[in-house]
Image (cartoon, rainbow, N blue to C red):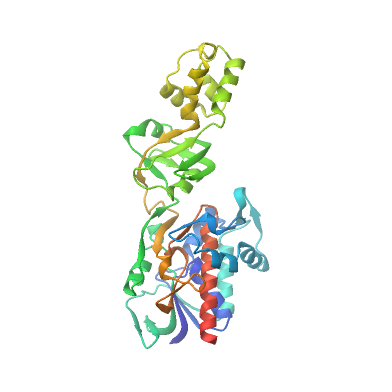
Length: 390
């Protein structure tokens, strides 16, 4: 039961690392407590798997060290993964903002990864409890097997109904690796009594520019019965911290739009003018909050400037997030300060690798986190093969 590498986790990063090392000649064992491999892959992208993004680069990732993802992303790019997809004959299409999806099913991506593992002679054991991890004489011992390399690819605690846990952090701390406190990311935000009026328009979606601090994203926002969701909100949620407001630009050039409305429909009131550009329920709510009751013809430029301010910068005050249950990924994780950006191995213990979501590297919404899984998994797999050969 001796291997060159034991990989904990049969998800995107773990399978990528296993296939890479296996095909380079390493003997690899993958262990996972789940009864099926790649469960998160199967539910991703509405079942079609947003498997990468054409714009993937280090600037699209959050990390305590923003330079850390550069090496892996440059050495195994989105184009490398797309070439693998095409070699397997998987049809794909590009949606908005560079997002690449399968035409068919996410099952095709999982089948591809499992086929790549099979080509590398990888052993995969599912429904296996990890238990205690031993280490001595330069080898790791897990579930009756031993290896010179151990790869932590168990992800983070987001989507616990899929079996996600914080196991990666416990293992890292067992070997003395620092962990940046994890938190839900790409997650809906909740609103409290201060912004209760916006919960009353649950189900309404509209394009916005959402901002948290210097981070801004121009996509759709969705008002929910608990608060805010939709792509723009999920994006800025990764940058949000308690007490920080979220700003929404509902209308670009709002003052000009209102002055034009005054010219075109002078007898109308603000609600009617806003309904030309925003959903009716949102227009009504904003008009009520702004409180400008006069006909537009009787509104001065100063009146319209004041009315335009919340349209250009609507400030909301989230009270929290919907937690790991609704989070697509986990931010934080094993500190990059403890790892080599080239090999994903612990600097103090070169046979111990940490990859994927378990690392303090979190991508934007839209295929970026899958690309990090492929890139970091490939980097670890190549390092294992090089260590074996050397």
